[in-house]
Length: 119
Figure 1 (spheres, helix red, strand yellow):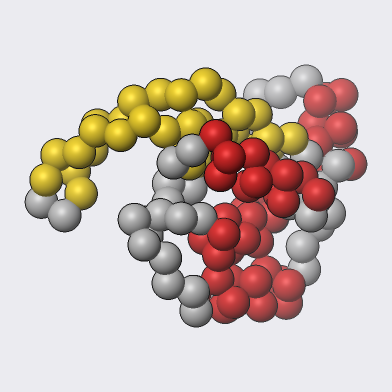
Figure 2: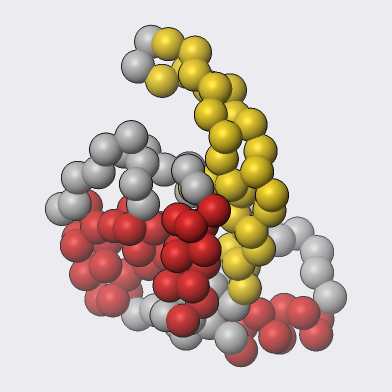
């Protein structure tokens, strides 16, 4: 689960994650309003919510990709474990993401950690 500051950014993130097979599917939900603390102030901002469907093994690579592309200094990137799901859905999900090796995950994370973004 993650947010983006605009519909365009959400669509770009979704396209990149699906084309790279880091996510089998990314759902883009309509605009939401977020209220949050940022740099000692309460902020309100419109955001777009994205739900990316991936495997636990691919989270590190997905997070690194999102961090390297995102416009926020601290993007929301949250993983929720699947506690129950239909077997056919899980088969589809795992068939539509590419497993990331530990080396690929580490290289992707190192590249993303070197980038600095603004809020």
